[in-house]
Image 1: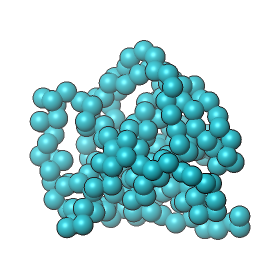
Image 2 (image 1 turned 90 degrees about the horizontal axis):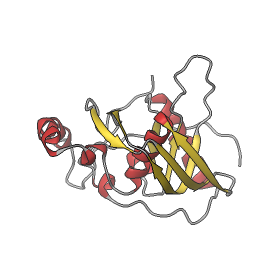
Image 3 (image 1 turned 180 degrees about the vertical axis):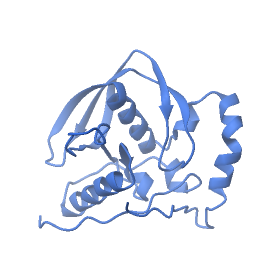
Image 4 (image 1 turned 90 degrees about the vertical axis):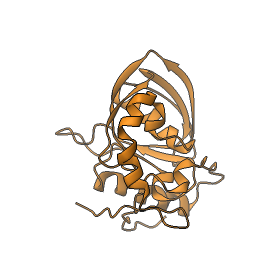
Amino acid sequence: MKKRKANLLPIRIVGDKILRQKAKKVEEINDEVLNFIQDLTYTMYETDGVGLSSPQVGKSLCIFVVDPYWYREGHTKEPYVFINPKIVELEGETESEEGCLSLPGIFEKVPRAEKVVVEATNPKGERKRYTAEGLFAITIQHENDHLEGILFVDKIPKLRKMLIQRKINELKKKTDKNGVNIAANEAK
């Protein structure tokens, strides 16, 4: 594959129908998929995300990228790429505040497993097993939920969701007649 300049992809916002659909399995890792992963990764960093899934940029593929510590001083940007991931173990319980590029301006405490074991294919086509804890585990669960059509606000208690429903409805108002809602994201 030739080296190319990555593209900044538009982020889909709550109300966009693709965010509520189950993503399709990646059948083959070819140049098109690898280019998409490059664009997805670039978009994650340029929009200050710690993770980003394919549905969030309008593509129904079981792919997400994660780099929960990229913002730390001295950390080199080395994203984890998960293709056709499957969470095989969940352990413990934790609750931490989450946000999402597809729900701008909304932050809520979300219950999650403290530790996860996930199996996924990497861009080289190798099936790998990852054990993650802390922010890494939370980010994996959050991004994996996107592949299932689940948003983090679906996991919060009803009362808390009622309190933020107005904000969610405001974001949904921008959805067009085709069910598309794209953010006006720009590179930093």
